[in-house]
Length: 367
View 1 (cartoon, rainbow, N blue to C red):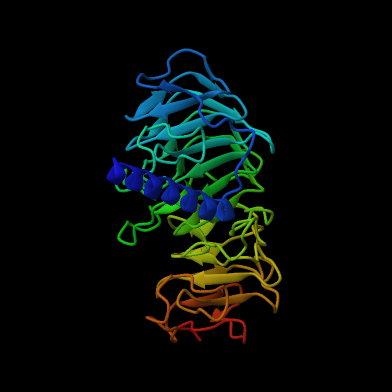
View 2: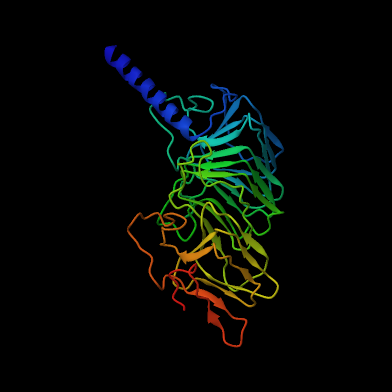
């Protein structure tokens, strides 16, 4: 009996210490009831469905959503080793500042209590569940929604959210504690994988969101304008950021075919390719923005002087340059920038094309 008492006390103490530390990291909503009714979700959603406040929805195996799923404010969804795949369906998850919607680990006792019934024997960890995959559909809405402890390997991807849908809105959401795999291919290990699906800010709305305690936070198309009101730190603890803080961008090949603003200054933009800007299209690089180039063949080419707006306070530099934009490659002092880390900034609009030379263009091979 004495040993049982000591074990119980230690377990309770561990749980209290964990909750105290997490409260500094994640803003807990007191309105979320502690001790919700447990609803095990074991089947795909094929008819219009509403998940209601007062319940915690537990998902232990991957499910698909093939109709409309509406999630009420204050709902908690807990997952273990599972994904939610949205296929020909729609998710409407509209929380409020007072009643956020939470997707988290089954071991996370902060929301709706001890849903797995093990007291303090398990704590939530990065990668406890896989991801939400918006494979297709239109009109998805996630507002005041939290995504915690996702990123378990799913077909080589380590994300909390992966999108392929043509239209959606994420507003005032938080992406935190996502597992990062440094061995993942290219940008497959980003908390929010937008990639080629994010091309138009009017169709794919992404505003007022926060990323912290992830590896790489965000991955978008080169011609998607990321709103500067998104944050790359914990609003409640600004020192808590991401280990590879930056906006990763993808352009498969060839020229840029849209006008885009790169105006975020909190973190750098990361390019792994050589992009060309044609005709009337424009890359508008904001004052104090930092663009980092990830490999020797990466760079920018413009076909007219107005194709790329580069203010004197903006920096084009190597991915390894920690002096601006922080330690973007997350390796501490293991690497250092050097001339030739990227190709350069090429002007191709004169009879004699040349590479731009300036104090704000660093570590390029050319000129």
